[in-house]
Amino acid sequence: MGDHGHGHQHGHRHGHGHRHGHGHEHGHDPDALPELLELDAEVLHEYRDALLDQVQDLTGGAPRRILDLGCGNGTGTLALAGRFPGAELIAVDVSPDMLHRLREKAARAGVADRVRTVQADLDEGWPDVAGVDLVWASASMHHVADPDRVLADVFAAIRPGGLLAVAEVASHPRFLPDSFGGGVEARVHAALAARQAAEMPHRGEDWGPRLRKAGFAVESARHVTIDLTAPLPSATGRYARAVLARMRSGLHDEISAADHATLQTLLDGDGPENLLRRDNLTVHAERSAWLCRRP
Image 1 (cartoon, rainbow, N blue to C red):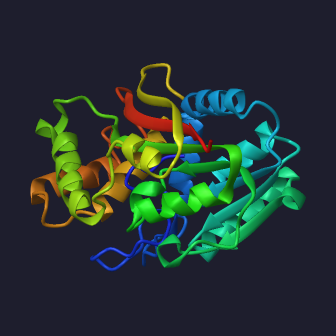
Image 2: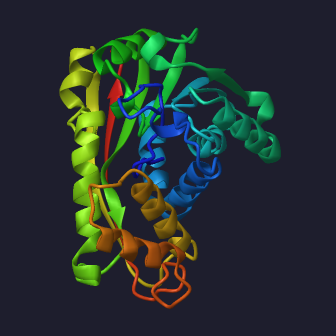
């Protein structure tokens, strides 16, 4: 799961001319976002596993039909397939490329017979999906233009007693010492947050009131701070590089030429300051999750 400026999509077209999240349709490397999502799942797997533990406890049995809303390339879909081996999974995303990648992953994992993909833009209407026992919406809801309408559609699609899990990224992950580059990482985060506040006004909000308004009973609301220090997962350097590269791609005049040069050194330099060679990285991330039930 997770967003990091890459969240799952869902078809909301923003003013700067591309779709956010798993529906990103950038002109640059088409493999960049899928790689970021894979690395996020690998480095922060303990958080996702703990959330899935809680979901499994609250389902009160084996869900028969699961909807992954804004599935991207399927890191969550495959985790759900492994956790609930008897379930049918419906994976919805706006991006045909992401859905193609998901189908390939499902085939490699031997679960293709249980996974059905649906291409849909939630801002244009609800897909033909109903009667589900569990909806998993990881870093997806903040992308939609009208979340109240989408949550009403989710409510209608879930059978009575079914569960909705909404997971969101509360802040982009950080990796560098605060003093590095005179605080360059903090400035990059602040610039991107200001831009995203205009483009994605629902990002970072408390979803509890909207969920209750839609008719759900919120059974759990959690805000989790994740701090990883050495020894770090082996993929941490690649994860940091993927996150900061994606953040840089969304910023132009919002940060100084000096900060752009520092990012260039971190991402593409051939010296010891390159993120793939640094020995002083940490991981700080914040996630929020709401687990709620249709009465």
